[in-house]
Length: 150
Image: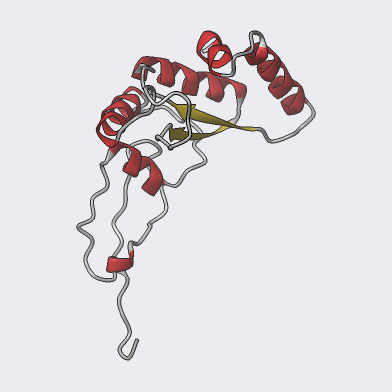
């Protein structure tokens, strides 16, 4: 984690300073959340270890794949949709039974791994994620009943 992080920000020692600051903020009663952008080349096992570490620290996690954008100087390390799906399916399989504290909806997590079942009947929302076991029902626009005259 430390090596990946410090290389990504091009500054050695930043990971250790960040962890120290997180612990200090938690000790003073603050709620702390972290954000992680995942790029191509990260192994699912490394991401799972990072998520285990965030659980130990007691912080919430926002995670997103690094998607390509035109002006980025490094175009080689972005994730495409196929790689994103495979990577996050592997990460979530490693996390089965764990209580990682994601700040995302179950819908977004399902999107990452392309596991969302859209076979909802009209007016009925079916949504489940194997990560937390409990997630709010989220309706797609197609699953919401239409009123006449609209």
